[in-house]
Amino acid sequence: MTLRHYGQNLSTNFPFSELCDNGCPADFAISNTLEFREQYQPWKITPSAMHENRKGWVYVRGYSPTRYHPDPSVMGSSVLWMRPGLHKIEDPESFSRAVIHAVETCITDSLIRSGGKVAKCNILLDCDDVGLSKIPPIGPTKRTLKILQDHYPDKLGTFAISNLSSAAQMFLKVLLPLLPEIVRQKIHIVPNDVEERSKMLKAVIHEDFIPSQYGGKDDYKFHAKEYYQNGRYKAEVMADEEGTRYYSTIPFYGP
Image (cartoon, rainbow, N blue to C red; front, side, top):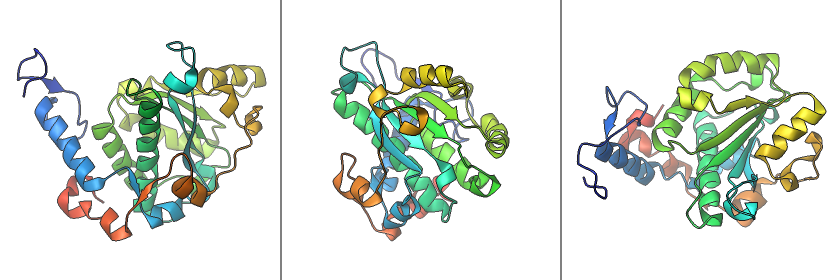
């Protein structure tokens, strides 16, 4: 494999999973991700995943401020919103696909708006009303993290967490050891103080997209049919059976 003037012995830190002992050869890493994309097709959503996300606990909306361009709608990273308190997981596979599809959508939106120059996604995790019954099972969570770490390296901008409940704090303690240090460094807790919270949110999210419950002016209401079938983030739909075909072709990422 030759990339510009570099030699053939390039290595990468991904996949992060136990596919390689001490980093992976670059050609293997790229081939692994290409195979994943071919078999999993993360840009597609299934009817079951749409149903799992019918309340809108994960979706993409808006963009972030940026110092690299006068117009943040061009170069600002896209924003992914997660509100697990809205929904108790019903199907682990649908949960995983809803998250991965949202990350794929977030990165794609950044790339489209920036003309291929920005491929980052900022995430806001709102833990309001997250009790023990709303915490994702550790098995599906680890599997989803494995896919994200292996196939979306260096795509996370900022990961902001708000309304950190006691149950969410417990889950975070379990989750943090599963994340690479470079990802943990990007996690920030949104302050409860109104002024400090506003300051942090405006650094991560353009003010036009800060929700009204955070003191912003965005009154957006999620509607699954509009979001997946007609809106800006319209998705290609595939059958549920097609969505689980990767179990046999790339079982390492299956349940």
